[in-house]
Length: 178
Image (cartoon, rainbow, N blue to C red):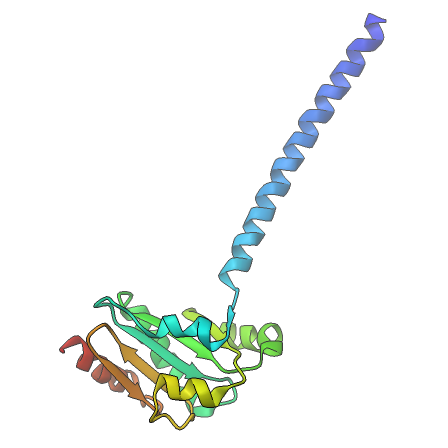
C-alpha cells in the first residue's frame, strides 16, 4: 500500500503545482487584457452625465471640443487639439464625439487609432439636442466643431475650427492671462 501511495502522492503534488502555475498565467493574462480594454473604452453619456464635465471650481484649464468623424473641419483641427494637449499636460482636453453609438467599435475607435488621438473621448448620445445645446451656450447654433475653453474664472465659446496650433494657443492664452 505504501508503494502505491507514494507515486499517487507525487502525481497529485505535480498535478497541483502544474495547475497552480497555469492558473497564475491565466490570471496575469486576464488582468492584462482587462487593462487594455479599460484604456480603449469610450464612455457613452447623455447630457446629464456630460454636464458636470463642462464646469470646474479650479484654476485648471479645460478644453471641451464637440466634434464628429463626418465633420471635415472637426477632423482637420483634431491634430492641433491633440498636439496642444500633449505639449500642455496641465490642461485637460475632452473630445465629445457626436457620432452614432453603433459606430464606436467599427468606425470611431479605428478612426482615433489611425489619427493617433490619445486624449479622452466620450460620446454624447442624447436625442434632445435642442435642450442641451442651449444649456451649453444659448448663442450656439448647434454647428460643429464647437469648443469651450474654461476654468473657474472665465469661459470662452468657439463655434468654429481652429486654423492651426497657434490659433488655439492664442485663445487659450486669453484664459491663462486672465
